[in-house]
Image (cartoon, rainbow, N blue to C red):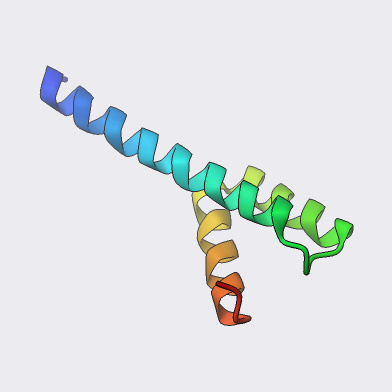
Length: 66
């Protein structure tokens, strides 16, 4: 893998980590969720990091949160 390909992979991975951290932070700070729901969502995001984060943001947006 060349330097440019490695740089692209690094940027993509950094973006995915930021997306994951944003999802976890959003879950933990959402006042509408019960403690059990928070734990459930965090488990989902930990088990399937990208898919779990996408699902969280899709469900959150659907229910009218900004």
